[in-house]
Image: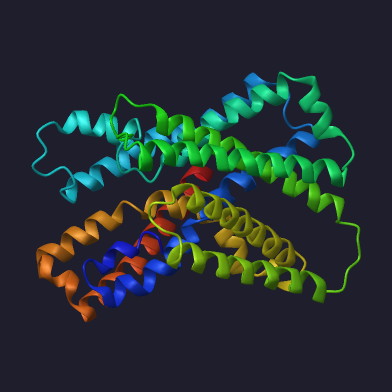
Length: 349
C-alpha cells in the first residue's frame, strides 16, 4: 500500500483515502521487520547456530550485501533507466552512485544495508561481551525484561528526537552526500528495534507455558489496537507542526504499539488452523522476494501511464483507480513470478 499511495497523484479521491491508512502502516511496518530479525537472531543464538562473530557476519553479508548489489545493478537500475528515471539528468553516474548505492536517493533496498551494519553492531556487543551473552542465555526475569524495554524505548525516542532536532528545528539538509547523520540515525534505529525484537521473544517464551483463555489475548489485542487508533488520530490532527519532539514521542509510542500488535497477532495466528494455510505459508516464504522484485516495476508502470494519458491523467478518478489496481496486480505478479523462477533455477544448479 505504501508503494501505491503515489498513484493518486494530485487526485484527492484516491490519495486522501489511502494516505491516512498508509502513513499509519508506515509507523511500524519496517520496524516489525527489524524486530523479527532480532527475535530470529535470539532464537538461533540460543540454539547454538552462531559459532563466532566473523562467521556470522560473513553469512549476513551473503544474505544482505550480495542481494543488494546484484538486485540494484542488474534489476533496479535497468528498469529505472527504461522508465526514464534519470531523463535529463546532467550527471547520471554520480546520482546512481550516491542515490542507489550510497542510499542518498530513492532506493527501496536501503534496509538491507542498514540491517547489515546493525548486525555488525549487535554481533560486536554479543560476541565481544561476556555480559551480553550471559544475559541472552539467562533465565527470563520479567522485571529485568521490562526495565530493558523501558530503556530501549527512551533510546528510541532520543535517537528519533535528535534526528528531528537537526532536520526540523535546525533545518540541516541531511540529504547532502557529505552528511552522515542519516546513516547514524538509521543504523542506531535498526539496532534498537532488533533489541526490542529480542525482548519480545524473551517475553513470549516467558509466558509460553501460561494457560490463558482465548478471550484474554483477544481483549489485549483489541485494547492495543484501540490505543493505537486513538493516539494516531491525535498525532495526526492535534499535534502542532512546530512541536516535533511531542510528535516524535507519539510516533515512538505508535511504533512500539504497532510492533506489539503484529507480534501478538502472529503468535495468535500460529496457534490456529490458519497457520497451516497454504497461502499464508507461501507468502511467508516468498515475501522477501516479492518486495525485492516488485517495487522497480512501479516506475515502468507510471512512465507508461504518463505516456498514454499525460500528467493530467493522474487527476482523473477512474484512471487513478485503474492505475492503483494495475500497479498492485502487476507488481505482485511479476515480483512473485521472478521469486519462484529464481528458486527453481537455484534448485537446478
